Length: 427
Image (cartoon, rainbow, N blue to C red):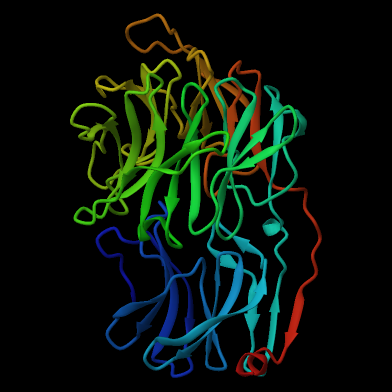
């Protein structure tokens, strides 16, 4: 008997069910693979198949001793829960920090009992990530900075001397790392999550996404600051309350005439827009979904400003395409067997992307042609880790090195047993 069904593309998966003690209700986790949905733990009824959202979470929850236990932003939390009505009350209490969490399956490794015992696996993968230099063969050359909670590999400055990166957990801020001296400058100071930094063509400013809640659907804006940390934060674009669009991935065009960004109005329908920075300043679409229920996932402007590379799900799987910028006229498919995270060499004569086979791929581009001309695509090397947030790599301006976000080598971690966890909460 089917108990749940997807509603208006809000979700693409329902998983991790658990029966509640009355045998008439159950819990499950729901989300959308695009990451843009009302995700979290739901309370369902066997009687009529109805269900409702209980709270936001990163994975499936478990009920024990009058509490709902769940994972959110690297913490295992507990909140009082009425298992007959599916409602929470009171404030959540943290049971443990840094619990093992699999972003690919939305699963947290923990199990509570009714007699006061709780077992969980400490987070080996939540110890942070490394950002390293690699050459074109995939050989690790050196670390970029000490291990931390990086949101992707960041963006290399146009001159190749600095790296703008989002780091921190649960809230992240934008930092600029001097790649030669090892010093760093902080650009944002808490109060929200700051993601997806990008440089101006002259390397003087950095724009980024400010996320106000635990998910991008709870409010976003596009902002900027001077790369040296001076001056005040500038609001570039804010969400229109009447449209309720999520704003993502800001990039300035190399000539400084446009603020390019993504707008998302639901689980599907994301596209690339350009905001003129002079005149009427009215945004216009550059790339929009070509078929229903498809979306643009990632994009990058070429350094010469002529091309926009993007990945789209219109074929049924994510593939990389290129179109003219800013007109959006013409379209050329770059990947053939699935691709995402397009990037460019500094002279716009080479395009890179991450394939669904786990490899980085690259191909030469004829920068002198009026139309997009692509050399045969070459496999570069395998990447073992793809960051759940942000690009997993960036290419140096000369195309000879890459910064890559990687997990640390595996560390053996024992299970942790907590006794009388419910009693401690009641205190």
